[in-house]
Length: 93
Image (cartoon, rainbow, N blue to C red; front, top):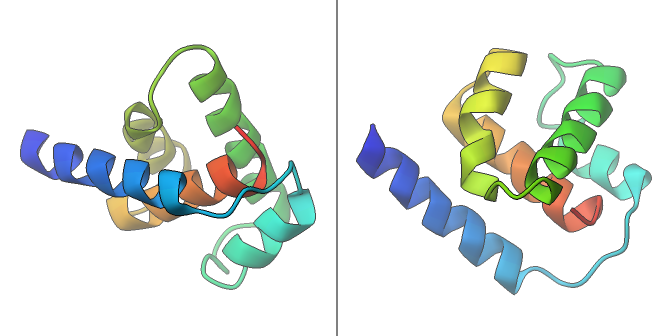
């Protein structure tokens, strides 16, 4: 499990550092996530994205947010990573 999380941390870091710069944009975030996560409501997606940003701004790394998102939304690790990357890039965490 530790090895998986370490690999995911590297993936998140690479995706964030190579992503184009973007301002805080809820519409872009929703456009990126909603089609892939149709099992979630718009409110759940936005709430979790903002929670991820708050978590990161409080000093945690984006990879530390993976277990939180998995538990909060009862989703797979790859889906949680996708949501976290979208939040960081589109919501400007």
